[in-house]
Image (cartoon, rainbow, N blue to C red; front, side, top):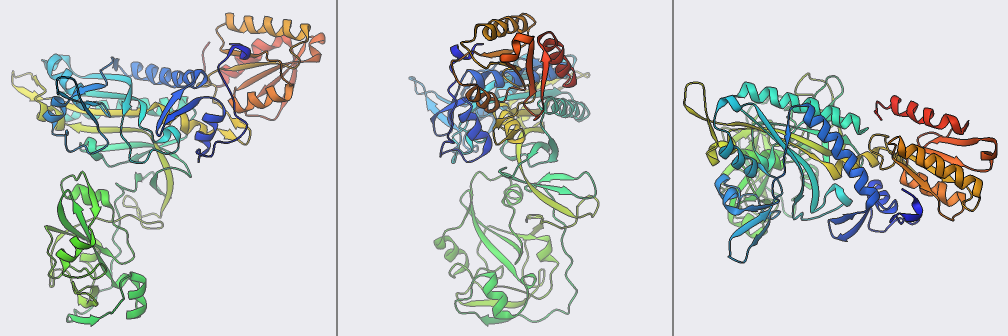
Length: 570
């Protein structure tokens, strides 16, 4: 492609709306343009990069014996009603009716569609195992679209579903996809970590996320400093700190006027945060529930939702709801005499001695409280793990980093097949539910994450495998006939050899062309300038400051050398 013919308008200034590097550079380099909040048009340069990521995904999925097909993004409500998710999925689901008042949604994910196909097409165990995938646009009405394509309302996803006859087969399919994902992200030049994760609205028994460490990531990721343990903080199991054993004290009502926060209580009682158990009141899909954690801990709402059987909306209770549950103002809730449908008690609290809680009476707290003697509830892990805490796997120290999810794999089991009647006939002639797995990769988010990891102050630094163009030929003076003739000949030769090349033939200053080449991030730059009269050109890699002067005859071999270093075949 010649730049003089390209629809590619680079931007010198950073758009005010763009907060993170990938969003800024995707706009500045002309990869995409915003159409509405969370909705973007991909321009020719951005589409080429997206297609390169898609092709890597496609190659590795095909190598792992998955078969590609394409489902509709318009899904009838009946399928979601079959699975029980039509109302459970929440407000992110784009719902609409056709002219006949029949309900549909725009697919945010395709479990129901794939399961429907399986129940129609799979009849016998002889057809198993089977893995189907698609690369398709998804739609989610995000409450807060942000960071460009990192969290948008429309995005491209590769989603795959495996079908097996038993759990042992699912284990093999799951491992096969995990290995394929590692290859995909390595080929894209991404440094990722596979971590334990919560299955969320998708459901199922086990899941893992592929996380990219990022300062602007939306997830907290837990890593052990001593072993390979890694988990999303939503999933990471906390290790209770054992309280020192004490003789049980009697309960005592203590007047605490205008003392509500943990900080104020610590000062008032002249003790530490570890002597308090805070009681938080929630509205869980209309049920009023309470959660207790130690005074210095944070509630993990994902663990709470799971403990309550899966919750669509979990929100802090309103002051009116708190008053009804506790007979007190906000800040004085406690477990004794609490009027809620369920009380969840963190394991750490259940093993504390003589702690302090709210008295369910405005202006009062109770000291000397002990679990089992004074109140009871459902005991479990309901808090966030914290930096420096012990690893649940080896006991080493935990560290926490921000991360962005680029892929997620799930063991769905029979969650959807049982609900939707997707069965096969086993070796004995008996019907059995298909055992399913689910595997997703965000194509747009993968592209943005590559830019987050590969850029500098001048622009994008594309890994060779996914660069929209591998080579940029820059003509120093476009009006110089000798330079243009050599550039055209090299351009045509590289195109003939199936190398994706761009020729900057614009009537611009060389400095402008160099800045655009760096901004766009083309991995290899060939500059044809005044030394062409000696048969020499400049050869430069985008990820290096070194500039090499080589003969025109050496250019192709130098390019092939870079391709080989990056394990890319021509």
